[in-house]
Image (cartoon, rainbow, N blue to C red):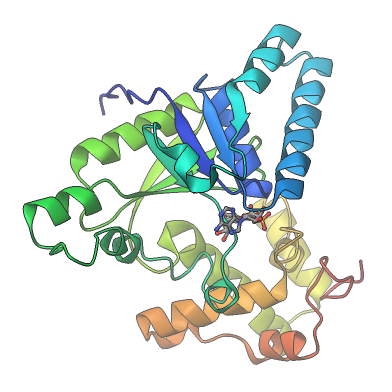
Length: 290
Ligand SMILES: NC(=O)c1ccc[n+]([C@@H]2O[C@H](COP(=O)([O-])OP(=O)(O)OC[C@H]3O[C@@H](n4cnc5c(N)ncnc54)[C@H](O)[C@@H]3O)[C@@H](O)[C@H]2O)c1
């Protein structure tokens, strides 16, 4: 596939949490694009910038980049002040949204985010989604699914909404490539490819444990040594640190409800673990003790 020029001269990143700062960093360091970073919490922005400094310093110390590259990358990231807020993002070619989900929506993270729905909601109320103007507005929305930690994980999953124009899709792909990522494309389905495969895999491993088919250690060892996975599914389920079993359950429930396919039924043991508030690494107790 030929790569089109992304023609992105400046980006805005909304949210300076784990994902937002990672995205700002790869955009500034790899794609060498100026970044405007905005977070509703100034403390979070300060924390995010300190994290960027730490990662750049580590790259320099390990000889992966020169200190001049680190300095230039850092200089490309500018914080949008609180007074300006979102309006400070006016003159950018692309805005990447990486804010936390609101609590009711949090239930749906990763699995239910319909890019098509987000694109439709970009159309102002007084404009018809079927009009030329409506299609043009919604056509500019595209899904770029980065993985945590962004500077380390090599993948970006690219998701086209029903409305996304081919030009926007191609430019988004080029941008992700410029950020040093490999890009895969997924249709806009619950979980995209990544979580539609990963979550049932983890859920099935929990079902094996629930049915007493094998011990947790044996389930993990089977996949590690037999299939060369870097870690077993019950270790992986909490590897994401801040995520945990509660989020896994929410994703699995969303896959189940979003597809109405019984193969996605969440394991009862997973539900009970969450009832017990044993979420994994993030609070110290899960299938293993942390
Ligand atoms: N952490 C992961 O492993 C991971 C992986 C892939 C996708 N995601 C998704 O990426 C998004 C961000 O996740 P994260 O882990 O970086 O979360 P996070 O909680 O670390 O950071 C989110 C940031 O968004 C800010 N924020 C919230 N509402 C805002 C608003 N209206 N305007 C500006 N800033 C706002 C918060 O202050 C916070 O700093 C979420 O939607 C999450 O589902 C996360």
